[in-house]
Image (tube, rainbow, N blue to C red; front, side, top):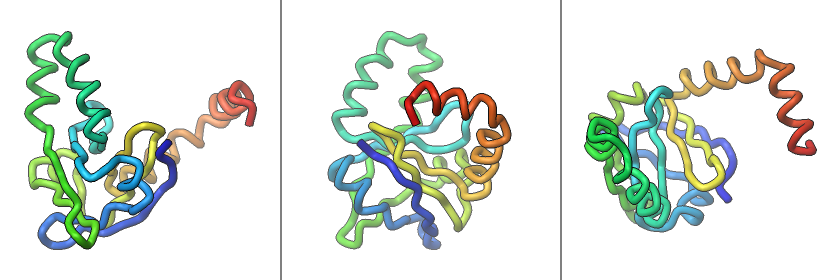
Length: 138
């Protein structure tokens, strides 16, 4: 299970030191893909992407094109850095400061500003959050 929040910076070439705990959980071959609606990037392991790819085949052509055209396979270098291609950086509005989070079976890469906005929107709905935590047994 992937979890945690990590603050990192993109270097001028668009590389980021991907957190070692998340690399261990995802493996050496990871796949980056656009997250429709959230303007962040989803990060899957090889197995996770293979499973999703099979489900994607059942979707309409436009959805297949949108998601498949954005897939980028990244392998961490010896320093643990991955390259985020310009098109994906632009889509997710990634600037220098980014946040990488673990979300159970995948990771997500957010611009730090957008992630903070997302956190604020979730915590602003205290009743919904409290109810969910009660249902989960927290």
